[in-house]
Length: 122
Figure 1 (tube, rainbow, N blue to C red):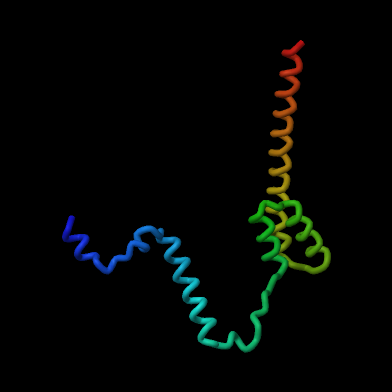
Figure 2 (tube, helix red, strand yellow):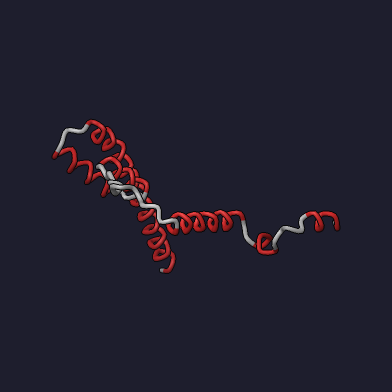
């Protein structure tokens, strides 16, 4: 045991406390600070954020906003002819209907529980 402590004499106590994730975060912050302090000019032209309709639909689907994703698909399909959006709409519409059916079932179960409690109370 003593040999390990002697061999790890360069090991800081602060390092023992920090988790790996915290260490990585600190390293990234240090790299960002180093890059900004070097005065390196950023890209000569600002990066254009391409936010096409398909990526917006994907983001809405990932957040579970199926209704908004379906609406965006419908408006995009009405304005332009995009086969990818049309194919995506089929899946989004199915997911939206599944979500609506699941919420209906849960609401029905809640209502039946309340009704059962009312009947038992009489």
